Length: 419
Image (cartoon, rainbow, N blue to C red; front, side, top):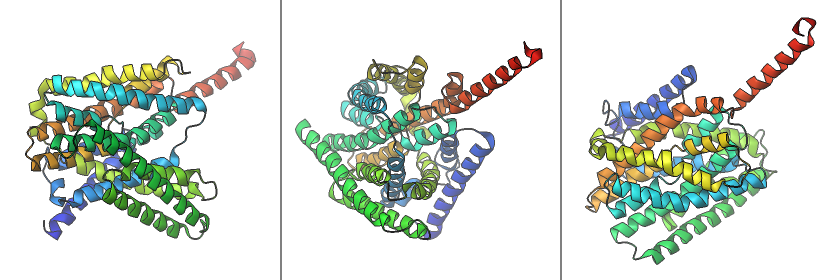
């Protein structure tokens, strides 16, 4: 690929993402929906201006580094106030690991027609809700606590678990792993190793930040943070592939919990960069979607995705929150809001390349089904989340409006004419 063509690829991608964000700001529509639409327009399904595979091996590197930035930002902001919230997140993660994997496997095989090995990989890839989608939606619709914290916590914990598990299932399908015992050991090594390395690097970074004042050395703090994060992620991927994702989350959690690092000031800078990463990544990965990969799935693929959205997710949330202090409207919103994000798209794209190189039949169908899941969940849930939250009275905007109405009504009643 020529340098001019490479420059055009990034120029078109960033411009499309920025335009989508501007339209989201002007119209009030969810930014993730417009970013996904922008990628479809500039990619294979549209004008063909951007071909992500032209980046070659650099695609995985760029996506990995930018995703690590988004997950690090999520780790810094992760707040689970109260034992009830922590218990809810833990139970949702455990139930979805068991029920979501089994149901996704059966749905992908029986409804979408994938063979058992590829159906297992699909089930792991789409296991997690995407923080890159959930977090912006939560902030945009201003969900009342503790719903936002529960949804963000679920995504941040399940995202790296799903990615690591999908990689191991892929290696099992390709014959690089032999048996479930090796798979379980690999899962423990990558998750445990990633968390341990991330916690250590987060502690070292926090110690360094503690000695650098926020003013006037804010730029230096940001550069040191990015350098540490990218070196840690690259090192983890070299030692244990896919361990960089749990490492990024763990490092962010450690830095965010240290009260003497001025994490709030750093977080604002990281958040801006994370938003830029989302603006670049979503159109880039959506550009890889081809209608030729989606059309063979037919109604079976749609039925597979809808069964995960309308049946499996509500059952999992109902079981996980049984006996906890959540109202029916809160359970309803958590059951509905589960969009898949950038990590899901990135893993699908990179895995499809490996499967095609290995000559595995059905690689295109796997990637098509993953992107169909992203398209339906982001489109349907992204557009409906705000109105649904306001209708259920679960957004801070609706609560504020209700409080204001109560104040006005009380003031009217206090007047002589309002008796």
